Amino acid sequence: MEKFDKQAIDLDVKEGLPFRHHWHNRFHLEMPRGLINDPNGLTVLNDEYHVFFQWNPLGVVHKNKCWAHTVTKDFVNYATPELALWPTDVHDKDGCYSGCGLVENGCVRVLYTCNSKDPNNIRTSAQRFGTLLNSGAVEKDEIVVPDNPPGYTAHFRDPNVFERKGKRYFVIGVQRKNETGTALVYEEQGEGEQWKNLGEIKTDLTDFGYMWECPGLVNFGEYDALIFSPQGLEEEEFQYQNIFQAGYIAGKFSLDSMEMMHGKFQELDKGFDFYAPQVFSNCERNILLGWMGMPDKDDEYPTGELGWKFSLTMPRVLTLEQGHIFSQPAEELKALRKSAVDIKKTNTDLIEHQLAEGAEAQLNIKLRAARKVSLTLKYGEESTDITFDKSTQSVTIDRTRMKLGGRGKRRFKLFADETLEVKLFVDRTAIELFMQNGEETASFFVFPEADVKPQLIISSDSAIDAVGTIYELGAIEFK
Image 1 (cartoon, rainbow, N blue to C red):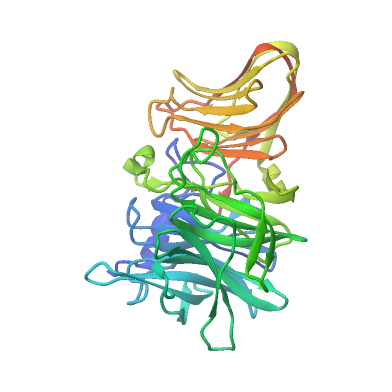
Image 2 (cartoon, one colour; image 1 turned 45 degrees about the vertical axis):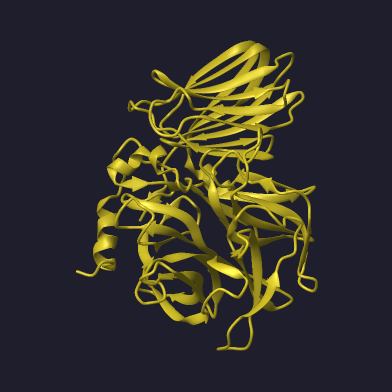
């Protein structure tokens, strides 16, 4: 049998659905087998959202990089994921790395990085197009960029196509020979010709990590945001606390000067488990998916012992306001709501509510004289705390009272004066937090030792008023 037998692998996925283990999530995209990571190829055709993502169908290590594919019209009902792109030749024998999706002549097309290593472990990174066929597989085209340009290492990957004034370009993450990260832009030439390297996007970030992964130029009307994942930033008290980051610079990008006039770099998510986000192309909204996971932290994810690792985030709609990206769960996710309990408590310092195995809490907390407010997810003897401290205008996520998986703390700045606004989505292991109307978000995993549903406890150091609704959420469906 071939190493990548599409028919056998697709059948194995079908047989692994629906999920049975209590650590498998209900409304986050994940696979019954193998390791998934970067969302890829996000594009829209005929009102259907095509979602590709990195997948190792043969194990839970970062090898055998393939692409899986699924499609949805509503982010609730999905086609059963299939193997779509896998190593087949000398160009991508060591992995089909990340890339983008686009629509061309009524077809879904992809552009991805081919990874190949010689016997001396010297890497060649090439860029290649392909077309999604009715069979569910991607038919590969010729190589359009055969290797990395002079002045850059073979860490040259993750192309993402964008359009300006009727022409096509792609931005790609690279590492300079001096081991600093940046992004290049390539311009499409005539049909059948190689793409032309226009050079680096000029930014104020001349020495900002040793590699920029998964870049994407996203348009917000008159403004642009360059989203990318820099590696090698030093941790600070309230930012850059993961081993690798994912964020953006916002402003305006000029192709004429190849310059991004921008504000400060800002993280898209302040949780433990968020990396390599991508935004849908050909879409009226800027909808983002991210990888819920973190490279080089494999020992923090105990599901690996059960044969699978990682999830994708829920789809998030991005808006840009005064140079800052706000994130909100896609409206389509409201269809997951099954039942609702209204919360209306005044002059209290303690609220307790038993959550279902899938839950959404929408809360507005009037702080009054309170300086600290905590939202605790209690899993039997274990718990995770989310605490807002008004005296420092900061939030702390504390997983130290969990027994399994990643633990530790994350801290980030958040301004709240009179009211703290919270949207909290609690899946079986994946948790997503949106605060102050999506000004800050945080994604993270917890792995409760016992198969128990969490209790939500809201506590404060002084009386608060709280209003909102807690929903039971159903599961996404695979068909």
